[in-house]
Length: 181
Image (cartoon, rainbow, N blue to C red; front, side, top):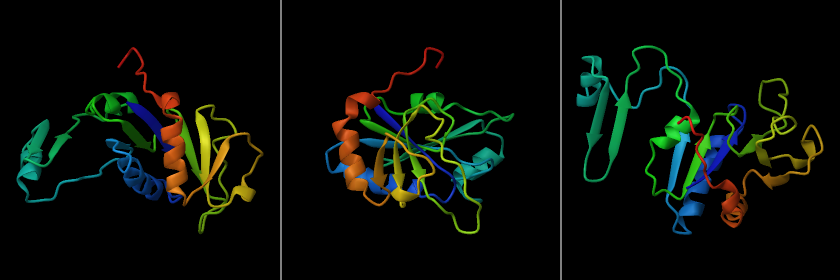
């Protein structure tokens, strides 16, 4: 399996880029999974549904499955932060690509999604300047990057070019889990 991360500030366009990359990779016959970092009390279930009722009753894990889908929900009794590597280990080993959104401090190779300005926010520093795991930049303003770089710079809206680069450079992104996972 190959793994690439997407790091950037909220609102920079990470989700949109990942959403556009999935069908690009799928058109090449590749199986794609996504690992997404979420904030504290997110929920994928809805009050009143069977799985929600089981979790509310105190179940540690609830697996719901049909002939088309499987979902696992796990409740942590105490706050627990799973590493990106632990989450990748939960995925089907037969997947070709894992797109990791968030986890900006991880030791995964990543594409930085960077915008020169965010509405109603002060300028934010770019990660590529100090993060050795940033391997490329996707931006809407290549001339507005805060520092010169030798990294590849992609148009944030050109998912086809980014997808083709990932495919062409695939061996670079072959996943090697750390020994402690």
